[in-house]
Length: 227
Length: 227
DNA sequence: CACAATTATTAGACAAGGCTAAAAATATGT
DNA sequence: ACATATTTTTAGCCTTGTCTAATAATTGTG
Ligand SMILES: [Mn+2]
Ligand SMILES: [Mn+2]
Ligand SMILES: [Mn+2]
Ligand SMILES: [Mn+2]
Image (cartoon, rainbow over all chains, first blue to last red; front, side):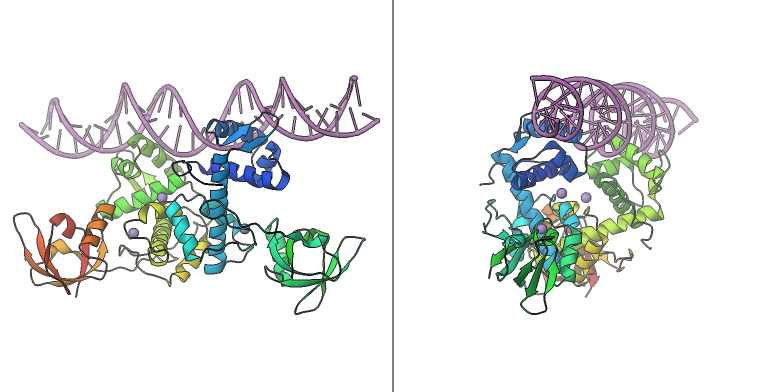
């Protein structure tokens, strides 16, 4: 996935947010439904339809009315650029400015729209070319390439398994603060003790510390690797 | 000058740019003429008039038709906040990311609109609470207070005077690159050798190095302190 | 001090990006 | 398969920020 032909493009904040939403939804659900986009952007479905028409005109996506939108290569490149900027700024905010990982999303949502290729590249170098953001999400490189990992969600693990937390999906502030309160972060190693069939809750024990319980809602959103 | 009562305010980028332009022009010229504002923002005078009416409604300025605009205390507070953000980001770009001082204005012009008080305060702390930006301009503190200095412009100096460059006014890229090419920067110490009445040009000698000539256009824009 | 030049405002238009309400297309359940 | 529910689009309206052209006010000059 190369990002050529994107440099000269000038998009508004709203256009960029639509493209990013379509990208994210397509990754998650396999498609980007009009309602899903509008919900993500806190707008109405009719506004999204208008925007889809405009972005289709600009060849950033294909819009089959009633059948959803699909980014073109050019649109995908724009989306990856935005994801790159968002995650680099999040990394800056947490690693350098000392923000909590639950406090950075809204600010990064604004900073990702600052348009300057030089800025992004220098920021990346300043941060030491990180491959993952504070939530464990991969940071696309200058060419849009993403380091892939094979992870599974914690709730698919069984008793006895020893795993390391590598990412949090659905990074809502509430979930992140809950993890904070239990001392869980990226890199934490856990051993699964027991899984309760009744509610899907899971007892886990961190390497150092005593065991505690996690609801299925939580274990569902923790991505882990064997360790 | 306190910045209270500004936190809850939400302004668009265009509104903010108008307020900052009025602030800067008032400082420089004693007043903010409609045409001067429009030139600064690359818009038409009629657009500025519309905006002045709107900002007057919001109590950010007083607009006496045909007699110009004057920021209220609230407007002044917003302006100082913007100047603060602009100069802090410029400092970050130069000191941390390694940008040249002639490359940062455009990017800072975008970053100044990222709204987060926490971000600005943490950025300031991260940078070590700087009092001046890369061009020698003072950075307002959290409360809008500016460290005042008594400087004069280089072209008001006479033969024999030894001075230190503390700021560059009118920081256009061209001037900054010219200064770079002559090895002049903030902190450079110069001794005035001779002033030529014919064209106002001035021969100066840096502490280490041989003498050279500066046009009046240049010496005019260098702010210096005795040294 | 009159009148020409300059500066600023008003009037009317338009594009972008939102909205609500109504209509159309697709999906679902019996 | 058909009626109903859901999803999406269309139609029409509004606000913001911009423009051009026309008008009004102020300033500078002889
Ligand atoms: Mn955003
Ligand atoms: Mn993230
Ligand atoms: Mn700006
Ligand atoms: Mn500056």
